[in-house]
Length: 265
Image (tube, rainbow, N blue to C red):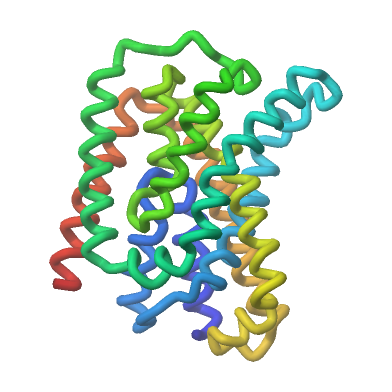
């Protein structure tokens, strides 16, 4: 895989990982265009590192303000506990997910189904704003509901940020707060996946498997592109808070799902 291909994948990954549109679906379409038939789990995990750091930078204030307070540590504990279900299921069924659930039709159907759910849910909850305005005020029940929703996101095409935002809204959170909590909740999972990658398949082997002759150069392209475009995406999401933004992404998902079915079938 040439450096320009890694750069393009990094840009797409940095943008779509943080939007409720499924980065997997986009990477598959891009891979088809670039002549890449298959992406290894290790490579996909490596691309997640840049977006994870982007989230840490963007939410630095929310994450570390009042660091020594009881309320803040209670929030950390909620995030940690809510991350357990997906970590457990992910480790247990990683082989099934990577080998059997990455079929194009599964991704396409997931895109369409959850796109429809987004549109319906937003229309039903347009007048509901939610009583909770701060991340630290999220209840244990709400955190755990969103945490279990991450398990569904193991199915490619679902979108982790999409399904957790939906779950947060159903649990009573305002959709922007649900989306922000979704981002923060991704940190333990994505960092945990990266640590496992280091143990099982070193970065050098992963990058060299793409055809890059330089490990450092390949890592720099992957990390910088996903970090930069991840930050840009987060800033845009903060500025552009349209009333029906979830429905817009829902429509986009449906169209992408249909496109995948047309291209591959």
